[in-house]
Length: 431
Image 1 (tube, one colour):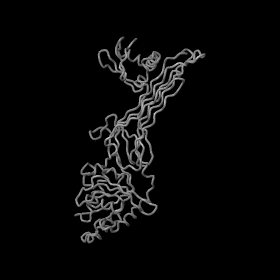
Image 2 (tube, rainbow, N blue to C red):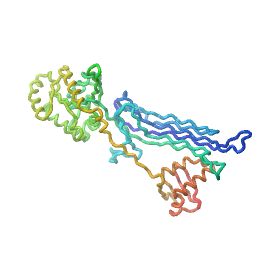
Image 3 (cartoon, helix red, strand yellow):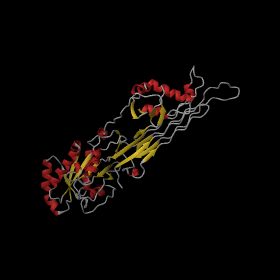
Image 4 (cartoon, helix red, strand yellow):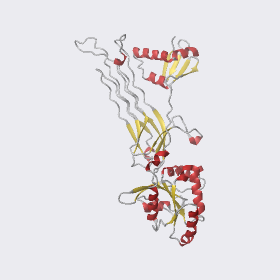
């Protein structure tokens, strides 16, 4: 089954906890702190695999979690860092962050684009693993020779991603339903799409590789039939029009038995332009199919003359009888030589990465005696604090004072004994 959209939940690994420990060895008094640091949590990485051509692997597996780092040990032993989790995706995958609930179908705003993955082997780190917590040697000072302070590992990141596949092909075959696109693809390549004598036989894009000569191959994509209104969602075009964006040259296949092939030609070009104005600038070769039929052969000279007036060189072919199909392929390949291979990279969209002020926070009243402190950095600091270690608790209190949280709570009206909520933790406010 061809799947070109998927939603997945990814979670990077948590860092390992730092250790509070003091060196103990015979004849070595006051050995000092020697608690090791925790290891780094694993990243979640999307990597392009050229052998894939759909997102069907995400049909049943939608959650990906990297491993956590190991905790630090005694004698300054570092915890082992976790391996990264590499998730393979096909070329042409666009990655959107929908953690905030952005949904275009329900009228929401466009979610941030994290990356546009096109090149084989290209990688995108979508969730970074948490760093390992520091052991107590890091907190030793001239006035604190016996630090009972360490850090828990930094929590990992969690994101909900929407993956959208836009197939990458050298040549795209477009046209109205039943024009013979799938038949042409099967003749030119090793693809075996479903072929039948009724419209909308092709329900999903098909890819095939054509052997031009001993050293040259090209990838062709058969785009499901487009109808009037496709750019607004009519028929199948709304789901598959974006696959045309990745093609470098278009073969516009006309149905020779259609009532008005020129009207079909104008209609499809209009839908392509409405969907993306850039599609009108793509190099296009026009082919009239079913020339093996007498009535098509009879109308061909007039159609050829009219297409030439519009600026298009046209060929007459028969995909079923394999008439002039090799010539059509060679002409399309010749057009490819006029387009730089790097042109595809120019269509990549910019990556937006919002940056949060680590010192920014908000305070809201949740109940008569409860206050909620919201800040990603402060919530992360709370998670990295071992609450069973008195030194670590004192360090957290000093950080709250330094960031101005204590003062802000006081000004907001917090009283002695009130509950302060930070992430999943409940703390008691004291003057």
